[in-house]
Amino acid sequence: MRRSTVLGHGRTALVTGASRGIGPLIARAIAGQGTRVILTGRSRSDLEAESSELAAAGADVSFIGADLTEPDAAERVAEDIERRHGGVDLLVNNAGGDPLREFHAMTLEENLRTLQLNLIAPVALSRAALDGMLIRGRGHIVNISAMVGRVSFPYTEVYAAAKDGIIGFTRVLRGDYHARGVSASVLILGAIRDAGQGQRMLDEAGMKTSRFMVPAQAVARAVIKAVRKDRAELVVMPGPGRLMRAIMDYFPGLGPAMNRAAGATASMQKIIELREAKADAVTNG
Ligand SMILES: NC(=O)c1ccc[n+]([C@@H]2O[C@H](COP(=O)([O-])OP(=O)(O)OC[C@H]3O[C@@H](n4cnc5c(N)ncnc54)[C@H](OP(=O)(O)O)[C@@H]3O)[C@@H](O)[C@H]2O)c1
Image (tube, rainbow, N blue to C red; front, side, top):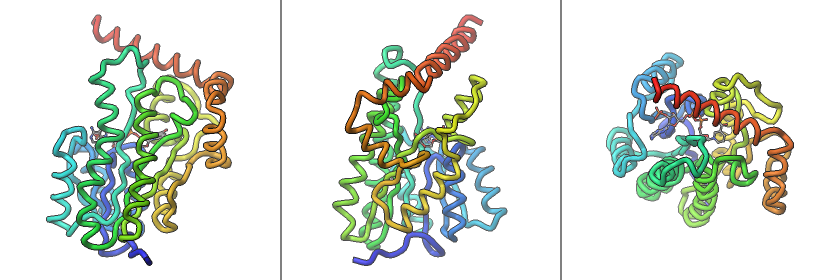
């Protein structure tokens, strides 16, 4: 079946995590295709600023403030867009992140919040947007995942579980609904520079970016490519990303050794210690 395009005039995209980091760049790239863009996130002031900037550049843009870890948030956001704009054609589940603390130092409640944001919220939003997509016979869901689980990146146990989980979710979703006009793609990101959590972490610790990091703008380009070329999976990292991922899956012991050799383990320990020292200073006045 030939799929209807979900980019361009008369089409609506919802981008989560669009208040800061990589999300605004994704929103700009989609708006650049003439698509109406709805931004979402918790910080209304940041969303307002992003919307104004996009509107000034000629984009058709609006925003909805929402905490996606709240149980009814996905339904509420999807219904709002259905009512005001006739539904979501392109959903980019970009909101996510990791508290970056040692697993044993976090409570189960904190772990569940990480799963909620990185796995449950994208599932709930996909579920909420899918009915309308199936009625219209067109839709595309792009989920943003990460290499962390594949490369055993230090101190990301629960985040890695969520990000690996979303890869499986996307594969099955794509298989089940592709013939009915709704596709799904997953972007598996390595370390990203210039914007987002990785860059913030380096800035916080006064560390330099490494040559293994990819500019955030490349993620925005990859979203457009995934949709236009209807790709099942894209790996966004330097070099042959898909091959790297396959090698990591074949040799699971390689990740920790590579992290130690590349200094990632020591850097992460330093950043965690720095954060703990800051938190202690605040607690003890
Ligand atoms: N940066 C990297 O190196 C990297 C690497 C691999 C994968 N990724 C993935 O790329 C995506 C974007 O990451 P980023 O680096 O741009 O992160 P970021 O700068 O921390 O931005 C995260 C976005 O998610 C939103 N968000 C966080 N908690 C939320 C909640 N409870 N409800 C609704 N929105 C929420 C934030 O907005 P509010 O705070 O306003 O809610 C913000 O817009 C994430 O899925 C991340 O896992 C990033």
